[in-house]
Image 1 (cartoon, rainbow, N blue to C red):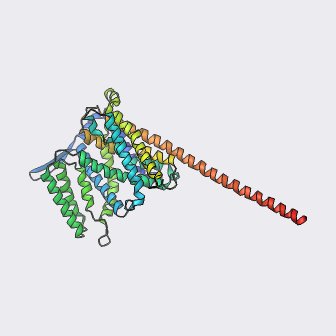
Image 2 (cartoon, one colour):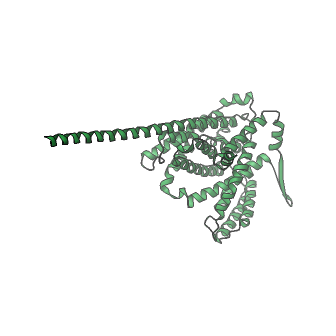
Image 3 (cartoon, rainbow, N blue to C red):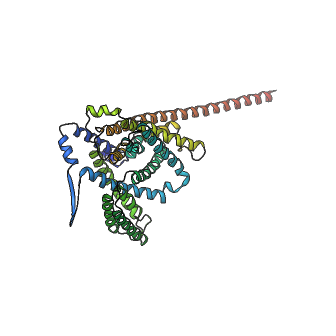
Length: 420
């Protein structure tokens, strides 16, 4: 019972729940429970505002509603890190920023090259550029205390750079025809939140109402609704007002909601892939190949090469206590796309089944392989580090023995001189 309690309090639980949700979705979709699964994800829920109504399937609520809440949470985290956290120090952010850019550019280029000539297929170029940090952190925790803390910090900073990049990518490349009237109203609501911040208003309800209305405007404007979450987070007060930091309080309270509800529901509603002979045969389609190459090769290599160059040019240093084997293993773990790659896949191809769900299957396969290979490489890195420490200790012992032998010889010589 104590072990279960510790597990639920650990950082690994988020990744474990996502994996469980994905497996459940696959089981439901490929068993007699398929009708129940389809009925669940396509069940419509909504609300009425006088003459206006909002009705979405659970699948769309997960992608447009719950993910907006997730990005709101991410926005609070990013704001804190930039203003008072790790990202506030230029010397600390050079390695994750440059490495993160390499991890975005390399897989994007690989995807475009592999799918070149097919404009529809090329829409998914951003799928292998994003990582599922919860799962990567979960793998690190399986390795225990033998992994240097600096490795985990680097991964978390890399994740923040990844999140910022995802927001920009969605805003620029994955928004539809824009309704500027609704976007203008959203801008007005954002301005109201800014005024509230400047006036040091510290009642959550005054921020929640305009934030929800802003989300609704984004949802209907053609700009992806998740961006409302990020924008709303910008205006939540971080610095304490009368001893109370609203941003820190919301971040703390949302943590469990995101971990135990938002991400599992999102994963369950998006990972239901019908594994058919057609889906398996389409794993050789350029889109599926581009996803697997991007996640398993291009993203890890992009991060490693960019980071290695940054270190060699003296701009930054390798995380303290880590060796290059461990660092490369960490880079491989960033190939775990899972929930975030599924999200980009959904908005890039707008839920079409033209690839027989092979693209989602490719994401799951690549993520699983990245987790296993990354884990093995990091184990090798740990073993190498341990052997090296033993070698250093032995060489230190040898030096000490040599010094003792020299001292003994000198003492014998002195005795001979005394006797003479």
